[in-house]
Length: 591
Image (cartoon, rainbow, N blue to C red):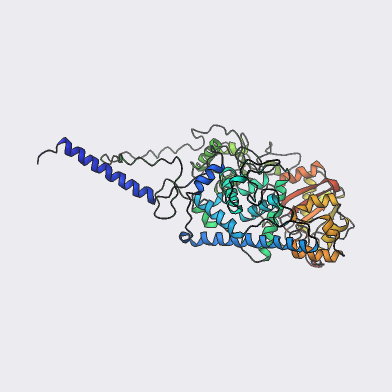
């Protein structure tokens, strides 16, 4: 056969190249390209509009678990919006003093959440949980409660709207529906890119450590509204959206996809397919790997020190995150060591490692502390006291040994029947503080044995006697709460503590009796106080010692302590447990 001429060879090569290009075009058309949260890129309204126009959501392509998640999302959102609208209407019937509430629907929120989910590669951890979205909507725009903030009619979450002016965003937003989408996109790009929702509600800052709101009580406000949303959902028998299997749906932008939504990402460079891999030379399988000498996993080559904290509530600097994931994988964590995000899987891996190696699990790794040392293969004694959580400096506390019982994670906000008094945090000197003292007021109801034992242990940890922390309030009925608001709370405190719910001191006084106000609260503000379901107590002590003890216990899973609130102006510390502190029997919960 005659050899091909140079011209024929070039023609053949050209045909092959054209075929490769055509193949790439087909693949590129079918292959889903997703946006990802980039810590080096700041969110902007320009990018939001350009990128958003490229996202096409196909609801028919949703899997059953995805469909249910967003259906539940919409139901919860609409239920709470209806609830707040009803409060607004009831207020308006009595006094015509409020403007129309911000118009918003559950479908808006669900649609914006779904668009964000699609845009960011089906990463459900980039979607704001519905209770947090509702909390921010209410906290930012005051929908359904008081006069809306300026600009809320198009930007319900006040994105780009500052205390004194705006960033020129308002004139660029078409309507409140687009303003809602803008909020979800901002959260995915700048806030949920390196923190979980739980971390945000502890410290609501973005990648640059900038606060979402200048109000220093913002986190407290959001936590309170979130609890109200969850309680309302439970009361209506609605299921909170369960991301469950959706956490496994995250799409690798570099993996070929078949069908689905096509999203083209800016600056996305296709793989070089013009130069096929060399398959003429098989891999050398004649020399097996040397398995006689195990790999050294105690000191990886990249095990330099992290520059700051990594994990739950940490700074989560990119280089630190990647290094920590690599080290955790040496102990079988199975994390994606190229993923820059710190999500539930990473935090779970940190907590498992801590529990296995150190005897505690707070989900946080600090430079030079015990978890970091253990990751490097150093021997570290197991923790026996609350001070051994990652933020503490010591590994033992001989002067005050305080063993912590670590049961399964507590059922937050679900009643736990009193059982073993030492189920939660237990201090060896608890009995020496004396019997718990109660005030003479009608709401200072005696707590169950489990709650008394926990409070005694807290006081022992703080170095206090029972006489120094008298319990003034535990479980309340709605009638109790109404009486307190109408007779024992000043106008200033009332607005500080309850104004975010749309309640006012003047409104409370407008009812003819405590009973009438109690009926109003039970019907319209079911989440008025955690004293009503019985998780909260007030003690007459505002010392730093008591609060330092609580600060130690709150991060510890299973300690039994959920949070505390400073109420220095009335001389008490409000403490919340993860289980009911008083028995239901004998207490009339309504009036």
